[in-house]
Every structure is written in C-alpha cells, then in structure tokens.
Image (tube, rainbow, N blue to C red; front, side):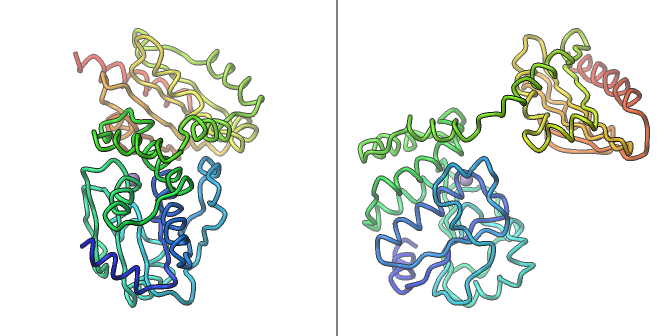
Length: 331
Ligand SMILES: [Mn+2]
C-alpha cells in the first residue's frame, strides 16, 4: 500500500488534496501539511474543500488557499480525514466524483466506521489506531522518506492537538507522544501554536460582558442539577454574529458544582424555539430530553426545535419537569 502511494505520487505532477464537508483542525492541518511536503518535492498542489473553512480555523496560515471548486486539470487526488462518500456531498452534487474517479485517488484517514466507502479510491490508508490524519501522514512520511520541515511539522502538530483536544482524550496513544517529541526536536514550537489558536478565539469585549449577563440570568433547577437560560430575539440579533450564546455559556454551566445538565433556549419573535442541551457524564440524558420535544442528538449533546407556537415559558416548565424526572430515574 505504501509503495502504491509512492508510485501514484511520483507519477503525478498536479495533485488535488481534498477535505470532506466537515473541515476541522485535523483535516485542514493534514491538507496543508501535504501541500507543504509535496510542494517541496516540486509538485503543484491544489487544495479543495466543498464548504467554507470555519472562522475558528483561520489562524492557520494557508486556509485562504483552499478552493471550493475542483481544478479542470490534475493527475491524482488525495482525500484526507474521511473514508466515506457521505461526507463528500458537495463533491457529489457538483459532479466532481467522476473527475476524481478518472484519476488515481489516495485516501488517508483514521476513522473506524466506513459505511458508504469511497469505492473509486486506488489506495485507502485508514489507520484507526492513530490519533489523527496528521499522525498517519507523519508515519507515512517516515516510511517514504518524505522530508518534513518546521512548516509541515507545525501543521501535523496542529492535526494531533486538534483531534486529541490537546493530548487529553483517548485518541492519544504512546506513538502520539513520540511524534510530538520528534516534532519538537524538528523545531516545532507548541506554545507558539497554542498562542496563535488562543489569539484567534478571543472574544469581543461586548461578548465578555454579555457572558456575565447570561450567568446572572441562569436558573438552577432540580436541586441545582439543571442549569437553564433563555435567550430572546433581541440578544440573538445583537450577539449571535459575534459569538453563539450556547457555546459561550454551556461549558461554564457544566463546570458548576452539582450541575449535570445545561440547557440554552433561544426564542425568536416568530415563535420558533431552539434548544441546545449538554450533559456531564453523570447524566447521559441529552438525547432523551431532545427526543421528547421532537429533536435528537447524542447522549451528552443534543438539541430540539419548536415551531408550533407554544410559548417559551411553557416549553421551559415542561423541560424542567422532564429533566427532573429523568434525573430521578438515574438514581
Ligand atoms: Mn481526524
């Protein structure tokens, strides 16, 4: 498989690197690392992603070189951080699938599940034991004697830190630490990368004050286990363009002693209500709450939408009662 990858790369001059429709630090870092590595080898590399790069990732120099359309002419493609066509809907819609299938295609990934797999790929290098696509690329580079420099090393470290949430989650393996050490030896400066990321995620002073407001207004119910706040249309208008109110407050809610469930309810003038639910590991009930209101999601993160015109206070009381009941049933 490694040899096949080497052959495809050496036989190609113009290479397209493709990110799926859910760009994150790993897929972006992987794409930029490949651009750097292959560029150093004298290849021309074209970066593609069907959706716009989220603003929180734009601290990575290079995001602006990503195109939302495939080039008319290329010799081979590399899809990073995805092994399923389900995540390549934009490409499918634009008819890009046929273009890719006509040329050699390599998939580099680390995801366990592969339903609806990319059947036209010539090589699928998918290693679920690795923390990130960046880690797969690092090991691939070692095997193929691809030269890594500080720039590609920084992108690979960004991949690893992104998917492992700063080396804190279970994706972090012993190899991950070894690679972090090797990248550090190469000259990659982790504190510098952290500072760049922090700088770009700083909040507007208006948001800082608004956060205090939300904290003041947060109600604690169910013996302090449920934290809930409602956000009216006027605040959505004023603050949502700067920062989404739910992520602004929900991790702080869950870091409050006894709080196990946090709910942020946005209510609009036209009667629509959008709720975001997050839970701690002690209360795996987010999906159950959401499903009661016709929504859905995961055990610890879910949401629902009400459009039948029922007033927010009614939905709120129902949510408080239901959550109390579900919490009681846990014990
Ligand atoms: Mn990944």
